[in-house]
Image (cartoon, rainbow, N blue to C red; front, side):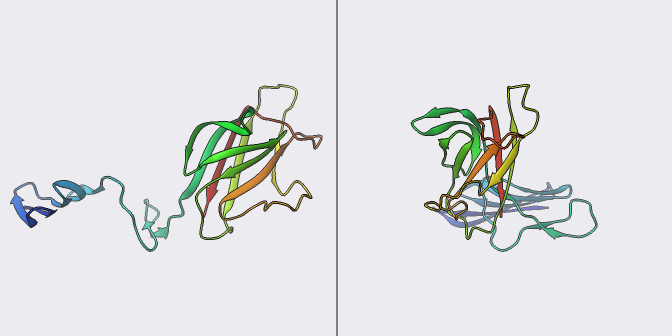
Length: 173
């Protein structure tokens, strides 16, 4: 027998049952957690406090560390000092500080002890490799890595900054 628990704002806690063999937890008639004989499903945007762990078939559970922010942008564009963002999650803007010099802005992290990963694609076939680096300038008037932004440069093999067509940045914390 299945049991549905619905936390209704009009009638309070409502319980119902059928013969499907599942358990559904609802909020105002919308299922947010469902458990069946074949597995568990969570719908909507739910927050988890504490550590989220899962097995994924490896034999033991481990803490999952999610990508806190990501962006794909065009490093060759500059509209009012900002690059064109093609897609992003939890990124508010990408500032173009000059040739190959960018600042990715995001909502505040707990601290600046995060990991920044990047990749670049270019349209110029004469430049075959790129370098991504946080801390490429001696200018100390800005923070290269803070709780709300990371500033970095993209350089070619001869150590000069350049603007790649396709820049991807992911931040893990």
